[in-house]
Length: 314
Ligand code: AKB
Image (cartoon, rainbow, N blue to C red; front, side):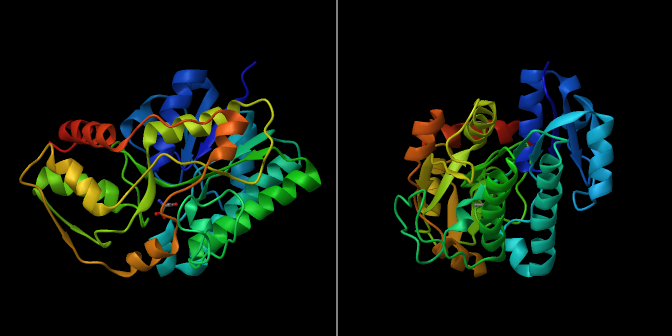
């Protein structure tokens, strides 16, 4: 019998598309979506949906018992840029939510967890190019600190209590169905709105701010494939890599489709965050352990985004 799945944070950027894909694979009756706010119509209409505050342990337990949930994808989090504005709230949300779910697995109520980490676990002393799976990690953002602490707690629960928790260090994720909110890599989604609506975009990062990025379909495949593996070698969190580009490079690619598109640069505090992160990631471990492989390169990503948003923002 298929283990029933709960997605927490199903109204967010990744949660939306993860919910739709999991329902397509496992059937709508086996995939319960939840969030503190309503989601888009596709998520709300395509299967069960619960309003849920992930910091409330009792409410989570009620939903888990009501639907006999066995696997949880915990996608709720406060991202890097917004977390700098609300450090204490970010720490509480990012950590309390994780403990609530880890404890459910420790008590054998659920049997598998997916928890997203981020390239934000790396910091100014980590190698910038091909950042290895294991290296110096000294995050300087609240978000990065919470993700690194979370990785260590996941490893602790795995070693001490046998909890099966799996994780990926997501790069910036690019998609058009639901907007990201509050991240440093958000410019790489906003730029498409600027290009289509105004033929112009003012970027909050410098033109050469290289960052690791990935198209949503690759991120969803990575997530579901990791969760489908029978057994994995490494439980803390996997580096996964797809493409790296700068604002200037993505603007040039957009110009191939919209020649009159112009980009300007007005870097703000998010530039400092970007400078503390890797520019490219070494993901050999994921490629070896569970055959991870990305599909989308920059030209295909840009084409897909422009086509998808063309219909969405009309
Ligand atoms: C952010 O920019 O905060 C996120 C991330 C890289 O984790 N997209």
